[in-house]
Amino acid sequence: MSMAAFFRKAVFFVHLWLGLVLGLYFALLGLTGAAMVFNLALDARLNPHLMRVESQGQPKPVSQLVAVVRREYPGEWIRQLNAPQHGRNTWEFRLGKSGLASREVFVDPFRTRVVGERQRGQALMPWIKCLHSELLLDERGVILNGYGALLLSLLLASGLWLWWPREWKQLPSRLKIKRGAPFRCLVHNCHNAFGVYSLPLLLVITLSGAAFIFNEPVEAWVYRLTNTPPHPQAPKAPRSRRPDLSLDELLRRSALAAPNTELAKVRLPREATDALGVSRRYPEGVEGADTVQIDLDPRTGKVLGVDDPRGAAMGQQFLRILRPLHFGTWGGLFGLHMPVKALYVLLGFVPTGLFVTGALMWRERRRGRARTRARRMDVGHTTPELLADTPQRSRQSVPELVASSSDQR
Image: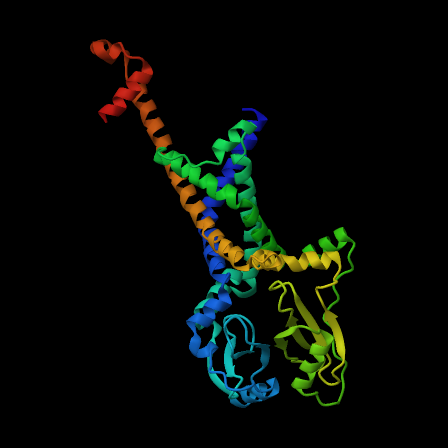
């Protein structure tokens, strides 16, 4: 066997068994990822009693909403506040730790009252999000997903190498699904088409997902390659005996630090030296990329840091675009927000199609090998004496004997 043939056989072995062993896992990531494209909008549609309230006048200050939650849930740590967006006009308060154990409380900003609560593990869309991002295993699942994304990238690359034609003139035929072809050929053509046409975006999605998880080495590599200074660490607020400023005043100062932006999230400090974190987004920007991060001293209101994507260094710009590439929000750059999101939903079904067609190809391959072994056994058991006793069979060649024995069975 030549070296080229051996290498091709090894690549085929890796591609086959990666697909068979991890195919269901890849299909799960694809289907949950498809649901995640419209995660917030679907959540608002499925839970209108939590997400929607009747508007009456102007919404009350955020500090009054925080006071209501602290009164209703004394002693609970308010970890994060999410401003109304994506079809929701209630404020979402996240209490306690992150993950499925976190509690979400929804507050009416017009009547300053709690309209409901839920555990993230008991709600469909948050549960799907945790299944997709961490396999319901917390930090261990996140790491497993990182390695899974790398293996999926290897699966896609090996499939491309096996599909690539030896001559350019064979390329058009490899891109077609032949109508009226036998079932085995049709499955093979569909498998190739699913993989080849979706390959560029699937590679982008998987590699960007791995970059989120292994962010430290990826950031170091990007900064070194682009000669960009590392991103500064989150600042700490100096210790002080002064009482905290009101939350409304702090949010007002954050708006001054990032004009022409809308409030998105507020991360309340837990320790004495923690800064107040505020996320503000540009209304016309790309979702997930055009978000300004502002850190303030909760006692003095001093702005400790402003991380604005507009005007950031090249390395930081590259890292910021990874999230829109993974979640399909980059279409806003070209006025194609909804078409690109619809495309990402379709891409979520591709791993399932690849697994099903790949499993069918493997089954047909095994059946073909079984038929070949059976024919060889039939020919091997045909003795010269038997051929002499049957004049008609003696005039047949070995391939004809194999065909006739197959027809008789």
